[in-house]
Amino acid sequence: MTTSAIRTGSLARRERQKADTRQAILDAARELFVTDGVEATTMRAIAGKIGYTPTAIYHHFRDKDALIKELCMADFAALGQAMHKIGRIDDPVDRLRRMGLAYTDFALDNPSQYRFMFMTALKHPLLDANGAVVTAPDEDAYVFLCSTVEEGIQRDLYRPELSDAAELSQMFWGGIHGVISLWFTHSKDPHITLRDPRETVRTMCDVMIRGSVRHSG
Amino acid sequence: MTTSAIRTGSLARRERQKADTRQAILDAARELFVTDGVEATTMRAIAGKIGYTPTAIYHHFRDKDALIKELCMADFAALGQAMHKIGRIDDPVDRLRRMGLAYTDFALDNPSQYRFMFMTALKHPLLDANGAVVTAPDEDAYVFLCSTVEEGIQRDLYRPELSDAAELSQMFWGGIHGVISLWFTHSKDPHITLRDPRETVRTMCDVMIRGSVRHSG
DNA sequence: CGTGCGGCTTGACAGCGTTAGGTGAATTCC
DNA sequence: GGAATTCACCTAACGCTGTCAAGCCGCACG
Image (spheres, rainbow over the protein chains, first blue to last red):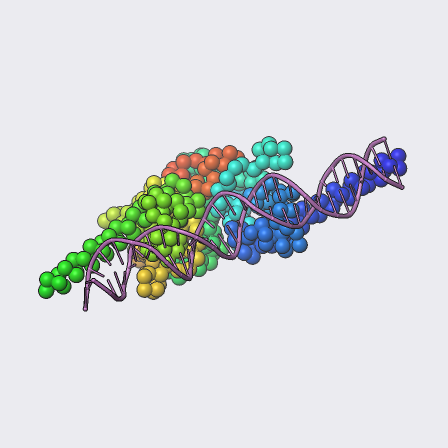
């Protein structure tokens, strides 16, 4: 009894300590990724920031990619949460517009995360600890977008030729994503002076919605 | 006279040989960049492909970035040329639509080039051999886009509140760019099945133009 | 014929992600 | 209580990268 209680207590403490270290790695990595960028952040820098050797990280994460993806998943969850806050709005078209603006805010407030989430191709699909393909966390936000568009289609709010919810969703998503990513890659380009991306996205939402709905006159 | 003729001849040959080597480097780099990607292509691989030592490249280009940019500039020129082929179309709105489709074709036909041209941030601005800031070659296509939009505004083809040519241009450009870049980064994502990007761009052009022009009923 | 220029090579450096093998303290077993 | 075991972490190294200082060597020139 006592031994078992001690054992479980010891085990629990050990696991908690390991979890703490793991979290410390994640925190250090997140901070460096945000300030220096993902590519420029080295495993050695992450380890040094928390007083460990680089190899220690490999006891908690398979490789650098796994570490990045772990952070990425949390970001997808945060994005999904931001999207769901919009869920209350009744009119699916208005909801779509609000989602676009919220998505833009998320991207511009978390540029480093956004870059990795949507501007880099994944090498191998996300795998969890068991090696199984992880149900995409971004499915959350994307499915929410699709269902909002689908709802508008069902209610005959969009023009009849725009009946493909997936295509329409990808048009909206892609459009906003494009303005955002152009801002990230070219805002410091001396040759092109970009307008404020929030303004451009706002205009784009207005234009796209007006071009999509029925009785647009 | 004769000596001067000989000297110039020798010099010319030498310079031609150097230019040939330089071009060989560019050709090898281009091929490897396209097949393996820019990041995955090493200086050693480029040099090996044409039978030189890696350091030989540094006698023709300041560093890897300069080599990449040299290729990039040629691509910008090609894109500009593709855009100018559209220049004949009278109606600036129709011209805009055609430019969007041509831009999409260029991107999907030259994915590797496009990736570097518009999906990576430049570290330092383009410098020519003299160290002066190079007049942006992409200005060509971008200025062409802006002037097409501006022409439409001048002719009162767009809605009165859409009077900012730069914002409108960046909205069109960003929108199309977004669909394309989402395709590049997520077309192999098992969680999201993207529609054919050409189709999505076509729909987007229709929607955006209908949402932008006057008398849209 | 000597001299020098310059394209190219040799050999190296520092840094990267990553790995095999070892250390030492905490825990468990007898 | 002493021995055995576990395991988080470290030491040392590997192969790779972009890049550079110094030297070689053939060709053009005085």
